[in-house]
Length: 270
Image (tube, rainbow, N blue to C red; front, side, top):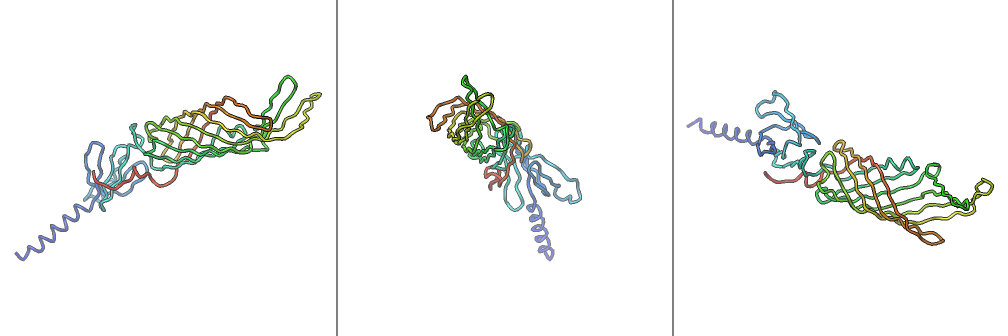
């Protein structure tokens, strides 16, 4: 009987030791007791309980449903790069349009994901590089009339829909695009093969269309987006207005940032 307090203390100690561990939950529901040493964007590193000097085991997040930490908090992994619907860790992205650079334009985009990453809003801002001749377009007609156009500034908004989310290596999206801006136009005539500018004016425009594209996730931070927008462009100047058909293509190089999405890190139990 004198040993009873010692036995009770030993049992309490062992019970506390057993519960003071993490649990890894696989996709098939199997629970693996573990001592997690590191969690990053792609994998979970752990050792087996009772073997502090044992081998380090690495499990990919795409093979896990989540982990239960010893303090009671829970991480869930929504099929990251696993080929099924899921969410991504970073819900904001900034990107640059590499295609516009070839035409003397600088276009930067900010994108924010919503609704478990199935919807997104993208804000593009663009300006022309005035010193670049690549941003100059010449138009001629039978009267030797020409004009030189320089893009000054434009802004827009894209409402995008990702049918299967954005967690796959390759993701399709579609949506509506709107753009507003103005350009500087310098028209003139060719007389004896020499251009003689005679006027300087601004042209304001509004464009709208349907966008289809593909988002490629290089890793959890870097993404590449290729898209085509088809629609109508309306221009207004001092002489009136006219409508033009529009077809625009681009390739964006993006970097994701921000806190992990709520749906990829939540409290609860399995």
